[in-house]
Image 1 (cartoon, rainbow, N blue to C red):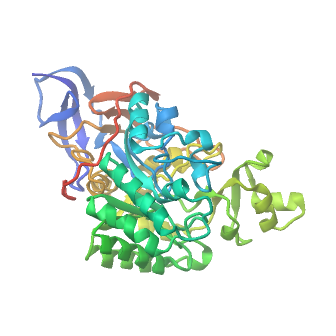
Image 2 (image 1 turned 30 degrees about the vertical axis):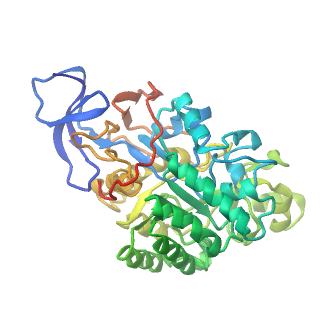
Image 3 (image 1 turned 45 degrees about the vertical axis):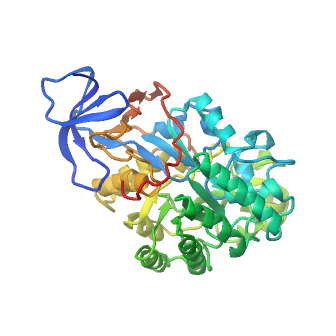
Length: 483
C-alpha cells in the first residue's frame, strides 16, 4: 500500500514510559498503521527523522480554552507546543451548559464576558466546536460553578434542594451528550459556600456514569491536606475517578509540604483511581481576590476592568501610586486578573516529578497579558526540566504529557505511538527545543516543535498552522481506565 505519511528513522518516544527506540512510522488516513523497518515502502510524503524524536501529540489536561477553540480555532498557542488535544471546562468554569441573566460571576469571567456564554446545552457547545473546526481535539468537562450560575443569583450559600436537583439534571444531560465529567473550583468565592452535601450528589452522577471528577480544591494553602481528604472522600463515595487540579503548596507558610501532599495522594491512589495535574512554573495565575493578598508576595496585575491602565504593574506599585494599602488597591482594581508568586520551586519539582502527576498548562487565553504557561508549558517540561535539569528522563516526561493523560481521561487510542492509534503526533528536535515564553513577553512560539499531526493530517509546520483537523472527543461509557 501507499502510506499518506512516512516518518523515516525517527526516535520513537511512544508515551508508555518505555525506552525510546529508532523506527519508521507510517500513517494512513487518521491512524498509525505500521511501525518498524519500512524501507522500500511508498508514501505520499516522507519525513526524514534527522535525529529528531516522534512523540504522541501532547494532551493538555487542564485548559480554559472553552471559547478559544471556537473563536480562535487555529489554536496557535497550543498546537505550536505540540499539543493535539485540550481538556476544557476546568476549575468549575465551563462555557456550557450555561444561561446567564447577568455578567458572568467570578471566575467564569476568565472565559469572557456575558456574550461568550451562548451554549444553553452541551449539545449547543458540541455543534459550535464542530462548526469551528479547531486545529486540536477537544474534550469537555462541565463546571460546577457554571451549574450554580444557571440556577442561583447569590452564591454565598449552599444550593437549595430544588436548585441542586436542577443542577443534577443538567449535569446528567451533558454527560449523556458526551461531556467527559465534572469539574469544581471550590477555592473560588462563588463556589466555596458549596458544602460536601452539595457536591456529593453531583459527583455521584459522575461515578454512576463512568466519568471523571476534577477539582480545584477548597484550600491549597494551610488547609491543603484537609482539602485533599475531602476530594478523595467525595470521589471514593461516588466511585468516580479523580484528578486534583494543579496540585500545589500555595503561600510561603505552606512551602515544603509537597512530600505530605504527595504521600496523601499515593495513599489514596492505592485505594481508588486518582491523579493530579500540575504546571511547570512556581507562579499561579487567576482572578485578583482580596483573600489571596498577603501583603508579602509579589502580585503582577494582568488586566483590570475598571483600571486597564494598571496592567503590567505589581499590586505593590499600584498601591503606592494610589497611596493606599494592597487590599484597598485590590478592591479598586477588581474585576481583575493577576499572576501570584506563591510557590516554592522545590515543591513544584517534587510534584512535577511524581509518577501520579500529569501536565496541564492552566493557561488563560482570554487574558491580554497571560502567564507564559499558555505558550510555554510543554516545551518547558521537555527543555528545562527534562533535558537541562534531568528531573526525569525523556520517556517519563512524554508519558506525563501523553499516555498517562489519555488513560486517566479515557481518550481511546490516543496518547501513544502504536499501530492502530490515532495519528496525533509531534516531531521534536530535542537539541533545539526551548521555552522562550516569559512573564514580560509571554506569547512566543517555542523553537524545536517542527511538525504536528492531528488525526493523520499535518496541522502545524514551519511555525504556522497548516490545517485544522481536530474534533470534539465525546465520553465513551464502559471504556476501561487502562487503554
